[in-house]
Image (cartoon, rainbow, N blue to C red):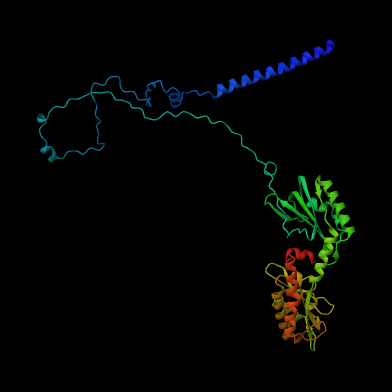
Length: 426
């Protein structure tokens, strides 16, 4: 080995020894400082007696509190307190007459004493110094522990009905910016897109409104696989995935896209929908003269139906969901202005089976209202072939075309009239 190598080895060994020694010195210094800080300043009588059991304990003088009162230096005689009446009563003549003579009374010695000032007995209060503590500022959004969001409710997004993309954002972004980011691209799709985000304040998943300023870190986007126009097309799927990747890049998020048999799943759901997607209609036709528009409006409003922009009267339940509707049997739609002069030879009551909860009960209500219309307008309830409907036929329609399809939906785990059914049959 050369001298340079030996010198470097020596320097290295010296550095290691120096660092080790410095660490030991720091450890010794910190240990001494800790012992000095933690060392008790007053003797513990119990511990000391326990440790020195063979040594008799020293007598401890009792320390009584002292009160700052000083008696006069000399007081030869005890001075009793004297009570003086501030409003003395003057003696009457009878009292003076009954009083003994002054020379018969023993003379009382008179003591002269200086007034003694007794200070008030108040304990001396020592001021307590309280250290100033800076208030702690908590940022609920940044410092609060992250709470698991939990799964998205099926009422908002259902994995059976939607292709769901999950995104976790580093920084919160408003819902309005998220929804409008790829809006122009997603409008070209033939299937709806549903936006759902996690509200950190209420700790629940919510549907996002296009104008909402809610800040989000957890995002779920669902592309609906099926609607009444048919199953999802490959072109729609490709466009959606491209838009989601662009959105993830813009938000600096990671897009988690499930690798599932999307198109096979869409075909299965579409086949199920075709078996239960029914609309029941009751036709009311005139027997002679046409129905007056004003009478139709009066009967519809009396039945709790409302004329909408679509040109039909609609009956809603207490939750605002559609029960059934009434439209013109002819091609002309109803409108508030035209009803004054409109006449028609027929009306149609419609019930959308998969979109109505408790369909059989709703069908009975619709049938009763249709009969009321028929009696007032002097019409007849007929089927699509314009043949009169009997009670047995109405009961058959209720059981076979409403009760059974809705039972099939319930067995599939998709209740008629539920949020999932309203999305699927749209």
